[in-house]
Image 1 (cartoon, rainbow, N blue to C red):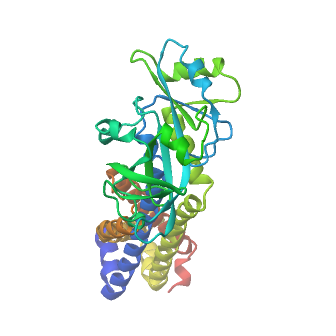
Image 2: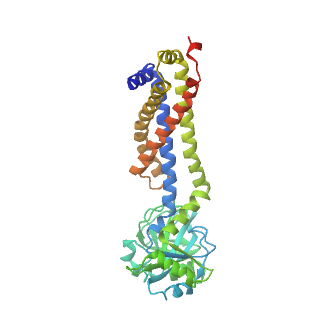
Image 3: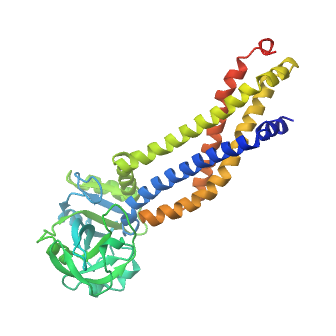
Length: 376
């Protein structure tokens, strides 16, 4: 009976119900958009790490994030190799470099990653098949997903990086992150040339793989005991968490998007509260009649809470549908990967339900304080 009464209360004014549903749909879509962008930002932060072949990372104590990694001595990698469980210790060089558009001459910035082509640093099949081309002087490999503003990406295109003449010698597929126009991969020798003789005995990251039977966390502990204080030792999971924590908690984009999710929930709670509080005000005499007939507060509360849950469902379904379209638009505009994992859908269902339930509980306070005798 409560469910039928709750439904009739909602549908009594159909145009008002439509307006309310549109409002909740907007809030749900906004929540999906904020969570989706936040997830895209954090995924972009670890794009490179997802394609690196390592179990343990050695980083400088001055490391902030990948593009501001600082350096550590190369011989720390040799020291790490003395542990039997270490399979390989490989250097990676990282720098932000100035890129010149081959046609317009417009300048931009790209992330440049340098490594020894003999080392299996990357999990990128395209590189494995083209290491000979990568070793050639003044050759760079271009990410296929670099932003259009880089200009022509075809093999053989010549332009300038850091005012050094270079040639695009191959491609790989990575994706856009927070690296300006995209990412370049070069050999360690070309990295040093482009960076005006950058010393290769100073590395940005040390990438360590362990033998199959070893546990990375145990090897990491041994490395911490072996290496001095000018090196930090992190497992793969710790390294990725370090990077995402920085972007979530220390950058404007991470903070704003996190706050946006909270603001969307707050707006939704206020909207639904106003709807339910107004409905209760209009129906106080009806609820008072039920109380006078002996119905307990719990019975009446269940009616209001069911109305709140019905509103959550009616707003969530179209909100989810609209969110797929919003994700497509955002992906095109930002060049970030926008997906819709099932866990996110469940999370927003829980948030929407919680938001509506809280609104219902707040709206019920006015009803619980009413005296039936004063309402007739």
